[in-house]
Amino acid sequence: MTSVLISPSILSADFATLGEEIRAIDAAGADFIHVDVMDGHFVPNLTIGPPVVKALRPHTDKPFDVHLMIAPVDPYIPAFAEAGANILTVHPEAGPHTHRTLQAIRAAGMKAGVSLNPGSPAALVEPLIDLADLILVMSVNPGFGGQRFISSQLRKIETLRAMIDATGRDILLEVDGGVNPETARQCIDAGATVLVAGSAVFKGGPSQYKSNIESLRPKRLV
Image (cartoon, rainbow, N blue to C red):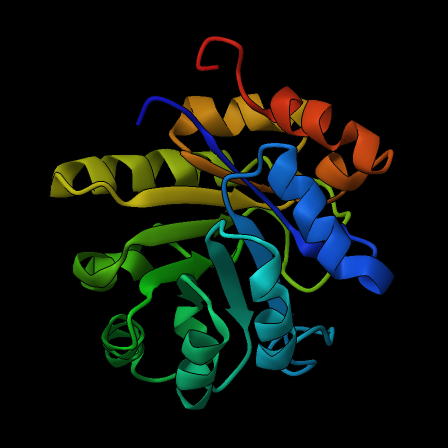
């Protein structure tokens, strides 16, 4: 991969004008649109569901990178596919049959992602990696935006980078949580290829989105 992909998290956007916010980050150079779905059960927060994803779909052609922090997952796969999700990422702890869940996501026409919490070892991915199109490392505990980056996750990113390279497949390695220009460089050096950022992208309003996004891309790769 010749560049790092930026996936702004709309959790930090102005929810009163989400359509406008989506169009603004699209124009500012976002590669993906990151959508955090939380159920107040698997994580201690409530956010959005398939109807909002469907309502936002006409506002951009960029891939919707949907991170499900919910349990159970399987009953909602068809709804997110119909709503326009392109990548659907799940946590192994969210259900007893993650392999089957990834199969179902792919069968529904989406790319399948696996997310690891800070306390979840890289080894959880090993039996699933053949079905994974994306691996997401949470560098904060999921549930809320604006948290500080947990630096111990850099070692996990390095481990996963080696696992991905061993497969010979172009699996995206994504990092979410506390990403800013400083931690972005650390993640990229460890092997990340996609960066999720909320407050670092949306701070300052639409006039700043382009420069905020570019500040996350290392100059040597731009």
